[in-house]
Length: 104
Image 1 (cartoon, helix red, strand yellow):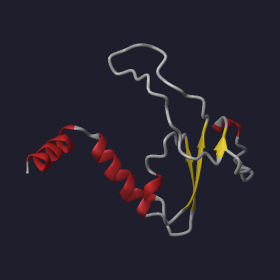
Image 2 (tube, rainbow, N blue to C red; image 1 turned 60 degrees about the vertical axis):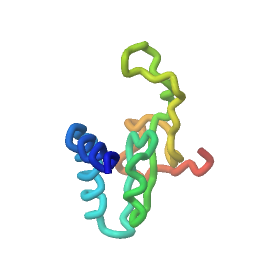
Image 3 (cartoon, helix red, strand yellow; image 1 turned 120 degrees about the vertical axis):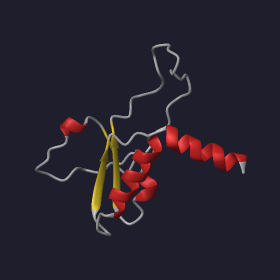
């Protein structure tokens, strides 16, 4: 009971939950079988909402940890999801399909 209350309070005080809910709702509006490129996908926190889509993840892929010490910095290594395309997003030619690197 107390955990339920804590979770409810967390959701009220942290707008991240509203953002996640909104992203999920918007992704579910996309037609089944559509192709999506998650540019700058990082850990791919929204991939779980894309089961009905053909999902490709892109990221530069070079972030490791926070280099500057601060109250919110982390020294835990950053973990990327499976990247289909690793590189600079600006190098993708919008007039052509991207080549998907299946070996990443």
